[in-house]
Length: 128
Image 1: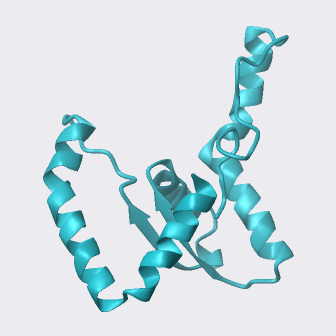
Image 2 (image 1 turned 45 degrees about the vertical axis):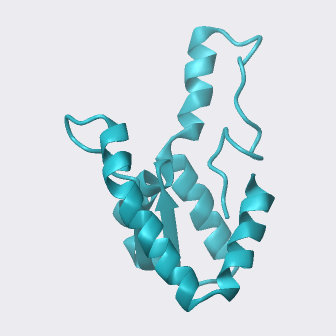
């Protein structure tokens, strides 16, 4: 699990007190997908992993696409879930249309792999 820079447990960005507009803009350039992908590459290399699989949801989905563009040879697989926004549609339309399908697929998954329910809940509690 990797928090993107500036969120979660990765020192969330607040008001950037004490910085002028130009310095704030310069600081925020370090929070873009390309910087996050470079972070992930440093992790991959430091772990001695030749190629790995990545999964991204929401902004993480955009990061997966950036990873595919920047370091395709580092990836064995790339999964995107919910990272590509609709064109000319509010995102709420997409979620309301896909909610029942996702709920049904989740139900079927846990029916097949009931032991994973507690694993997912443990991860949810840890990142929540």
